[in-house]
Length: 328
Image (cartoon, rainbow, N blue to C red; front, side, top):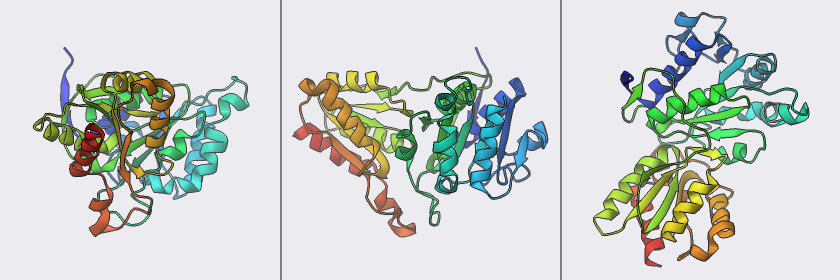
């Protein structure tokens, strides 16, 4: 049996990077302050001492340059893992992401792949200032050519990150910073993969399917356990990957329960909840017993400080959504 470590999610990020850098000399990390300082959340702490300045590269504060340099490294045969300090700072590099990172395989008619992983802390809940708390995963899920991963546990984080680094195509890896240090979990010391594009059923249930991912998985599970005391048996499906969605897992769960709730902290309009709802209408309409309920952030900028907790879905809001679906 493999030896394990009791890690937080952010420690699992570091462990996944270190594991692959040890196994594969082509893996390089780059980003602002990731070397000597170990990153703003210390996700790369000690890696520059371990692997040197040529493989853990401190860059200028220039997101377009960080991502563009990684694109060049990937096309040239390396496996770059650029970090953007906060996902809200990815926008200056958006052209590099959608015009280059996402398109090299199709643009070259399959001659070139682009094995790179764009990492960023994302989401709200930590009392950060403006442009630090957005949840805009739908931007990247909408772009053909990108895989988009949002882990919710330390074990999955390491395995998904290793899978992403080994993937021949580009992956956007969004790390929910609200749960960076929220809890610990046993994580194998050895390298292992968690498949990209496969959801995980975190709680089996028969009355309603609740689909979620990232930091919202914990309040969703809390809501499901609370409602079990009222006799409501909720199934909780952690998507883990928002592009590609595990369509089969979503549809099969819905066929079993006939009711669905989708929980995410991104705004409701244009969010992944709408895509999941449409999928259920297309693939499993005859099984539907109630309207699909969305429990999400609001269609406003993420508020500062005092109102941030109100903006984010919590267990109480999720419980209300589940009750509405079950009682319809």
